[in-house]
Image 1 (cartoon, helix red, strand yellow):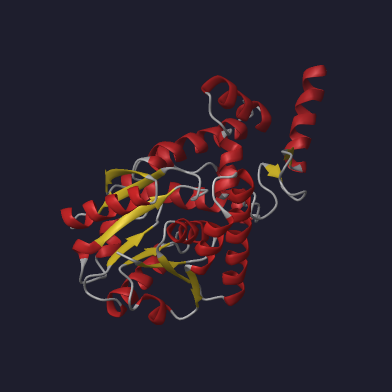
Image 2: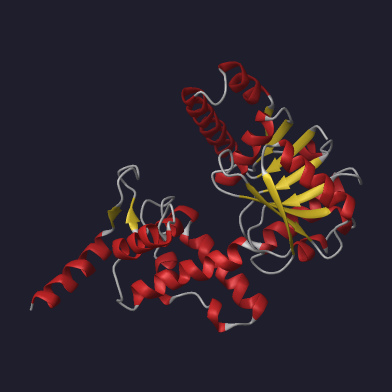
Length: 307
């Protein structure tokens, strides 16, 4: 396996391309938008520079990594010779089904098709192809070059050989793959998203403020990041989509997204990527500053308690 095609040049896509390229694979990075591709290459370059400064890689490896990446807006040209395709497009089932149907027509019958989906059924994705045995999930964690885990998700028809091959490829990326079965949210998000949602409900019900909730979970539970800050980092729209997948998949009201989360997404406050979520990132996000909305709530509570 030498030739990798990565579909989608956003946060996850450029991280996946970076990681494969750094470990010697030839990578075709695909996006419908040329400007998005250039932004992705700039991000990869910046992240490689950071690795060089930390001494984790050499300048030579940085340059080789960049040479290993080619950008494309034509999916057919980018994927025709791929040994493995990793789809990292938006977390939308219709988008993913369309892409996999196209890939099935474009790619060699031996090509393995993987999705970086964080919650959508691999079995459903495989159903639009004629190679269900070669469709699998590779759920990378963000930031991809740093995080060790890859959830390897077996669809209903994924073959043992394909699963073993993907597990071995993951290890060659210096990752730790964990095999899981194909149920909504898999393992990571089946556990994580209800926790994040409960943190938002705790805020919504006025039990505590944003900073208080995050502080309790960081200091009391040894989490490196509070759940509300983590939600901002993931993207509140992504959190909402995953919760809806869980709710639909299991039919259990415990996965129902908090009304506050729904309203924030409708208002366009999506977290770090939009500049505002539970925290304000307009200054670059280095310092966690509560958004005005939550500052006002905190001040109101203070006045009530003082009276």
